[in-house]
Length: 208
Image (cartoon, rainbow, N blue to C red; front, top):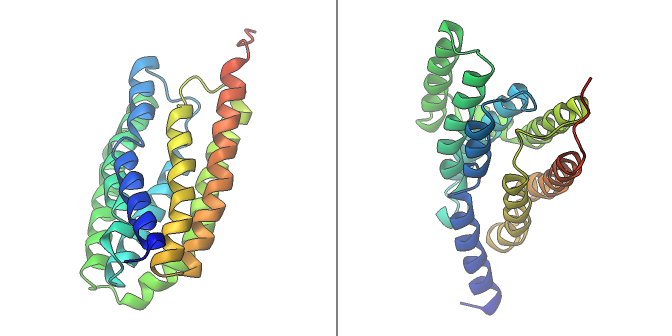
């Protein structure tokens, strides 16, 4: 194994390790402030879609587990995060439960290839704009509120760092241009959200 391959494996392990706590600061922040006013539910749902599709894409293509293990790890945290956002926005109802059931059925069909693999490949090609849209939606939610009290800058720092390491590890493992493009754009947008969060949290909140 070459030095570059060893570095890639080390970065993969660091990335996976950090992803175990990626959403935890954000979840704890929501519980602490008991508010989700600056969180974009549309952004979270788009993010959920992207993580789900990319998990299936990597798995069905037989890529190295170390190159995408963070996706299923983050998915588990994403479910918890969405629950708390819906809870604090008072949107837990029969429709949210119905949507959850439909989501899990469709996800299972993709993983088991009940839905043709070509459909997953098509969806994977849309993941870059979907992922970008999710982050833009979150950024707009912060800017419109001119407040980031319920947003955790640590979560977005970890997101920026892990996406950056993935640019290198994907390049070493498969050089898949679809994945590389997705991660490069994610680095740019995640860092923008991180700096915006820090900026608005450092400003005194104006009261009407």
